[in-house]
Image (cartoon, rainbow, N blue to C red; front, side):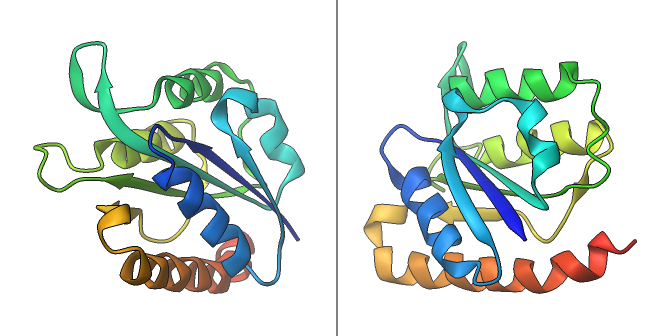
Length: 157
């Protein structure tokens, strides 16, 4: 099975999270790409697509996805694809000291559900990635491993 892991990142934490996820998905051939180099029409070629972004101050709003992820989200909305044969999951990094902690994750999730995409698992929200890399790596690995278990079951629906 094939997985596409798409990320948008400012500090590198979401990129590192994407790479940890790729290594944790043992039964998938995973490709990791930045959102700026990704088009929503590519999603149909994958069994699993994971979208991740940091939460940032964009357009005078706190907790927004990175600008390149916002562009990809617009591409998802504008696409004629129903994404019915692709499973999705959402992840992101943030700092719980901010009012809208990992709000980008919720916004991506909402975009996917609005277009009828099959979104699996819990949303992964990583708090302060660089402050505790070891603990966060374990959290990310556990999330990806659980997600991998859910894909075959839910994709049969």
